[in-house]
Image 1 (cartoon, rainbow, N blue to C red):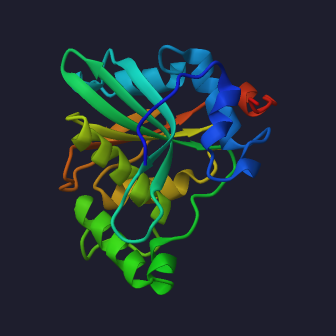
Image 2: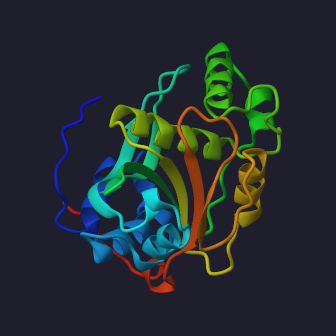
Amino acid sequence: MKRILMPTAGPGDWARDLARHEHWRKGASAMSLAASWEGAAPGFPREVAAALAASGKAELVDLSVVLAIPEFKIALPGGSRSSQTDLMVLARNEQGAVAIAVEGKVDEPFGPTVGEKRRESSEGQAERLAYLERKLGLTGRCDDAIRYQLLHRAVSAMLFAEEVHATPAVLVVHSFSQQGLWFGDFEAFAGVLGATAVKEAVVRASAPTSVPLYLGWVTGERRFAEMDIPRTQ
């Protein structure tokens, strides 16, 4: 996997590296996230900046975006496919660097549960799940009802933080659902990590993760989910 990155000219460029090209459509998370972040460049979307600042944590206040990388892949043990994060952000302030994994949502669910993954588990999948639980400090106590996608997105943020010597790591769900669809799944995930999830906020997980971890849920402006952006040719 190469780490040679090209700057974007606009949100349509974000379609280049999607795992499935049919995901690039009006009202879906990929297009909504691209429109929001490109519109805010070179900084954070307003709601993301506000949630980070409201945490009151010195390491999350007054952050500047250094890099924002769409469809960022992180290799994980077990299996041949990497975890593909919608947007990986490297930010920093006077305290140092912060790694932020952003998962975009509109009405898409978080996918299968941990229990479903266990039941269909190959040897490689079992290895990956055990690794994710270990990194998150959840070995032997991860509820089967938790959404598996949230585990590997959080660990991706932590692995990127380790790679770039950032502390802490942050997982932010950037939802464009004005009804907060699937917040309950995120709330349950935060709960097993010893955090109480709150909309429009970033909270610290108390589980013994390998890197200090924060979890956030923010709501993007509805207009971004209503945009229809052509794919860059």
